[in-house]
Length: 225
Image 1: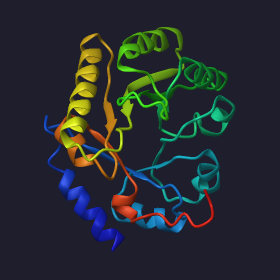
Image 2 (image 1 turned 90 degrees about the vertical axis):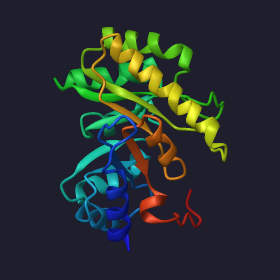
Image 3 (image 1 turned 135 degrees about the vertical axis):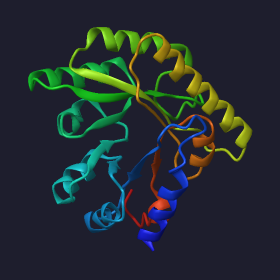
């Protein structure tokens, strides 16, 4: 079932987004076992990502060869467990976090690729830069921290059944992304769209989607949060 689901999603996104760009599928593997993740990799998933530092630490060595990302909220005191161990950190939501990642990478003579997180819906419960703050934040981070490389932007869309509202936010994110590219930033990824909204995101400019439930089914949280 997992193999068929993954193959279906890969076929679905093979046409690219509305701009003809290739879409990168990131499997969000929160609460999935290493065995299940390896089955997903064997079924065609090339990029996997954890939300929590502890889960990454427990599983990373058990996985088949693949590209690993980190997509969850990252505290500065946990940077040492993630930086220089994953290909891409999606969730850089403050200059302070960017500095912590940069300093860790600098101590290892390495460069860590990151995305700048935008709070697209202006939600108090979510972190990230506002649209108004984004350009200045990108400029400050790009100019001051030489051991991180900004590869694009990430957004977590609000939970909403209003597809027009979500589409407008996606268009706004894409306009911000394109505007920063015009300003000279060599971006590659607009990470936007999860299991409930990825089709809208793809139709409005996303070229990287983060799918958990859509691939693995609903998570069984049980008594563990």
